[in-house]
Image 1 (cartoon, rainbow, N blue to C red):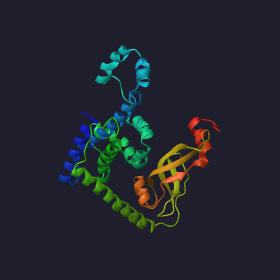
Image 2: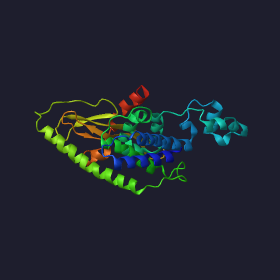
Image 3: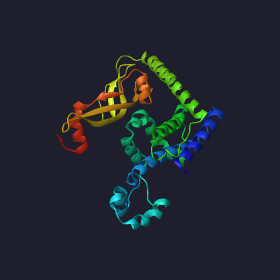
Length: 298
């Protein structure tokens, strides 16, 4: 089965269970198919760009052939490996390894869906190979939501341009319902946190930044220290033909406060709660170079 087939099957099963079983039980097969479809979509896009982005431990000749196909004049070289390539002899990288490469080509997906993809990464193997974990309704829905948005991001790539998946009426309604419910979800989370904050006696927790994936800020509800979870991205602006200005940006895609209990599950929810999702880290470049390269880069 292809990524599109797993996507179609997973969504059909998901919609069927969603409409017929309000308790949201028995979703194992649906979520297993959706998890596989997301992984295959990511790997298909990478493979179309270059097989070495997906396959691991390739023979040297095949690796060079994949990287520089036009420069290799030995036509028989590909024939030596064609059967193995089609029969799945070579292993592919892990989901997390391929996802990191995928983000380099689709940085906006990391910003929009990074938290959802992290959730998928943590639970993928369980959904596909083991006993189904106990999820809330929102956590079940985000599997399908992520699968639909991942396909929307890659649908124009060479991997899927001629093999599209067309959204059904159920898909469109589900996306609209999910996004509408998120507004209510954020409002309820804020209301609940405010109620809990009323019983607090001043500040109870103070903490500092712990790494490049966590930023300590003041909780907008209770005033205690809380954490934004995300990633730090390095980039450069070209000033002149030979001059570049490097800069760092922290992108938040989750928030949690251990004191009042406010929890926001992606960058959209953080923004909906009136909080910033991007922070200038350029003043920390020296530390970034030291952590990335192990010495004072400057």
